[in-house]
Image 1 (cartoon, rainbow, N blue to C red):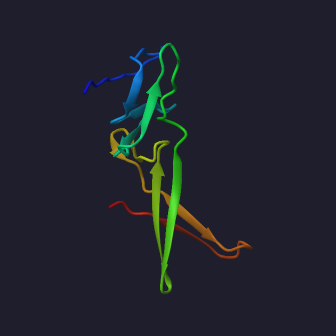
Image 2 (cartoon, rainbow, N blue to C red; image 1 turned 90 degrees about the vertical axis):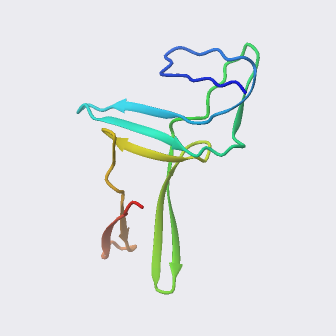
Length: 125
């Protein structure tokens, strides 16, 4: 059970040929204001593997693009909404700014002709 850690590789990293599973990953970026944004994978499904072939380049299935989604459930006359951010392996992602949780996302609801609009803010936890 051999483990590899790849930190900020600017050049390709060589791994022995074989089947691999990613245990965790994170990306960090600094924006024009100097704020540090970090995207971190949480709970990568165990069955998600990738293959490294002999003398071939393999692109790891991590990082961007990420998928932001919404699950909506109606119960009687009420609607329940859950926001999620997932990675390319189906993993849940956590986004922080300067090591703090970002503001919760907002959801704009409007009818077809735009005469009704309401902005809802999600809550964490």
